[in-house]
Length: 309
Ligand code: GLN
Image (cartoon, rainbow, N blue to C red; front, side, top):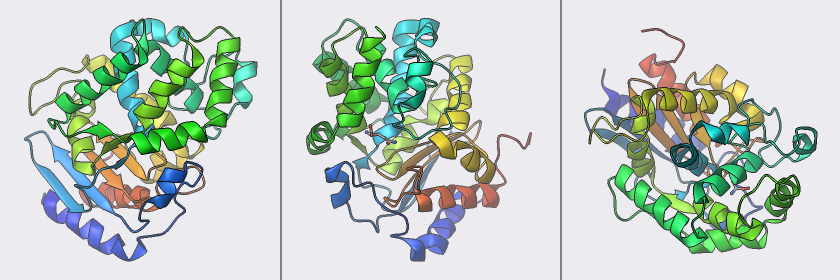
């Protein structure tokens, strides 16, 4: 199969639709990004990365970071993390607060904001917020095999300034006694984690461990056990796009995680990690063109977690 041709044909076929959807405006710094950006990167186990469009330009990964934060929090905390965060789809928006009271401060899953705030709290553990951010960045640089990966302080500041909803979620969690660290410490890490700037290429390379049972097939570096990687994939499939997760599984057929920066990271177990970027979003905060590109790649490759081939 000519994966390079599939990636570039997908890009070319959709290029006219650049600019579709609505970029996130509730984080003012994200509204400044050119809506016509469109990148695709597909990384395989032999170290090849097939790219098209703006695949080497760093963008704000936003909620895609929740996948890495989950893997690292599980590494620190082990399965005890699941006492604090559930594993069920929420059927609600990413920043919804309605289920938290009924569920006594235990968020439905680690990918909605409330769940990610708890995950980030456990990832910080007994360290200072700055130490935790340093550690996260160091791990991503190693996984992405790229020392230039950084977080964008402007985006972090912009999100913090307008972060009333995330503050509400965090204080609500604190009221239930669900956070181990002070609310503002947890949020300062959460906002910086969401403001990580990475390119499609860096994202796809960093996520190969998810598609290959916890181990990066290129470097041999083990990020987590095979069963943990499989479980993270399961959560991505069921919860990776909030109240749009069913639609994504239906159209694309492999695990993915979206971010309001317009990126989507997908893992195709045993085959590849794919990252796409186009800032215009659908109503659930998933990149409109990005999801279309992944659906096209799924169709052209025949890849699906449901195929058995
Ligand atoms: N940083 C964003 C927020 O907390 C992440 C949301 C997202 O990407 N879905 O609102």
